[in-house]
Structures are given as C-alpha cells and as structure tokens.
Image (cartoon, rainbow, N blue to C red; front, side, top):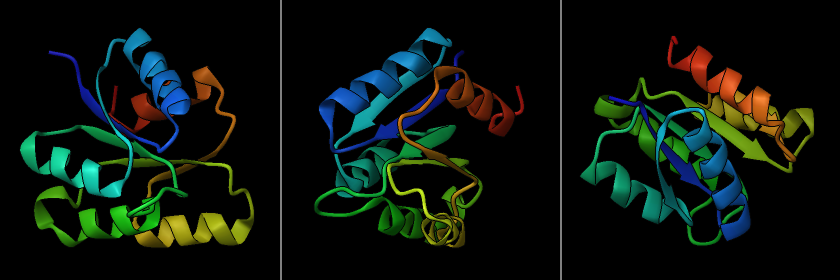
Length: 122
C-alpha cells in the first residue's frame, strides 16, 4: 500500500504540481487549500507525511504545524515546508514550529521526492 501524503497550498496550480510530483513517485496524495482544511482531512484520515506552504489564508502553514504538533497522535508525522520565504529567520521559524525539512520554491522534483523518501525511511 502506498504511503499517503497531504499537500497543503492555497494555490491550486502549486497544489496540483506538488501532488503530481508525489503521485508520479508512487504516493497516494490528498490536497487541502489552507490549514483549516488540512486539519479536517488529517482528523478524518491517516497520513504518512505532510507538505505545506507557509503563506495561506485562514490558517497559515506555521499555525498548521503548531496545531499538528500539539497532538501526541500526530507528533511524529514528518512535515516538509515548501515556501517562497527564503530567509534564515523564516526557516528557523518553520523548524521551531516543528517542520522536519524546509524547501524554497520553486521546488525541484528530485529534491522533493528525495526528502519525502528520506523522511519516510524508504
């Protein structure tokens, strides 16, 4: 059974691109357009990895990660941030919130898949 990834980004084009990359690598993918929608989907299903943007309406990626990390059940789900924010301070905020990997957009397909495989111990 393929590993299941939740892709979170407010841009439909970016969501579709990241979903396509993960699906092409053999993963099962579900997407969400903001943090609230992502939490709803997380509470309804099990995921092996989450890939999220930072800048989104309603609930941004940092708040999403903090909410996920509050729950013991989800504390070990690997999280990749994929963001246009590239400053060291932005990365530190992401890691402090609980992200495992921080990738700056535009993402390279091989880097995204390699990081997913590393976090999923494949």
